[in-house]
Image 1 (cartoon, rainbow, N blue to C red):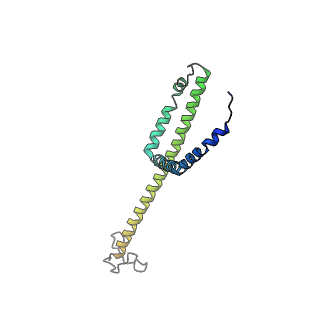
Image 2 (cartoon, rainbow, N blue to C red; image 1 turned 90 degrees about the vertical axis):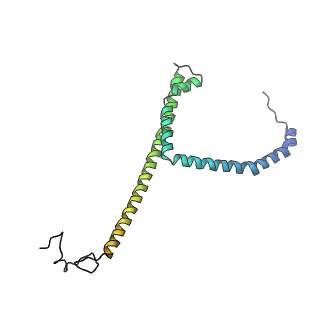
Image 3 (cartoon, rainbow, N blue to C red; image 1 turned 120 degrees about the vertical axis):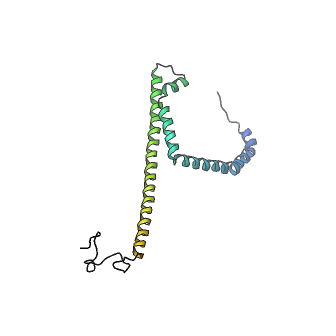
Length: 165
């Protein structure tokens, strides 16, 4: 097949090609960028949710075992070397994606555990702070000073654990 370039045809089409390229650059590129940013946000939300990652991992674990069916789609006979190679390739690729999703799931669980720990620590701090404020405002009947810390020299006569002697 002899492929020759006819420059005279290109020279005639140059203004039309230039306007098509300019129109694509003006209208097409921003639209593609908007679609890509929406797609990136969708993927980010999907890969940030534990349930979605678990579902995708389960799909890829199941897909790892359909290697012979992939060979049939490509027209490979069932007992040939190509069928075994294609089955092994399909298994390895699906299993590697499943392992990657499992590690992503582990990092999501660790991040959620860290957030839960920080929330619990904040709750405990606020409870302790409020109890200390209550204790500092309370007036102890035996001392009458309102201070819950008993100096050592005054603690000689103070009851300890309900014991008075």
